[in-house]
Length: 213
Image (cartoon, rainbow, N blue to C red; front, top):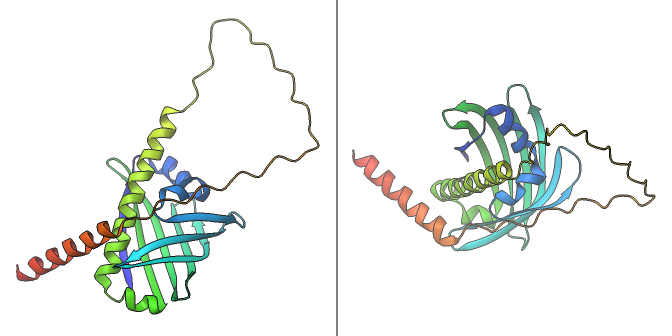
């Protein structure tokens, strides 16, 4: 099944694009996601927990950036994962496009999702999948906006220009011990089942009234 989503980033494209490509940095903003391993700059391992109706699922898999166009701000991503309890698997191919908007930037996402096994039955309703994807994107956008605001408030102050010539600090001693690997970010809290069900009901109501008009 294919569906589209969009969200806003309160930064101009030139600043928003590097932020979105920083997988380690934005992983905590994605509901239910946990980055478990950085293979290289285009391949990542992780888990994502989602809820399809009353069923909670956790997929473990790999996300690969198959194409990144830093000039036109587009990317193509492939993700595949298997449910931890052996209830099936999911494969997704997504394209991302970033364009300027009145508030900064708008991200357009087109996804082609394939479910197999028992999970295909849980998510057989297209409305359910779309409501889940929309809820995840909306929460991701809110978390990302908060992250942008926090980064803006923690920008270091400019050095003083009082006229005194600062004394250069002596070089740090070289250590034979390698620097520790930067820790991976913690898992993000999944979206509640109530939120998803409310979204499905609301979308169903809108479709029902839309069909009558």
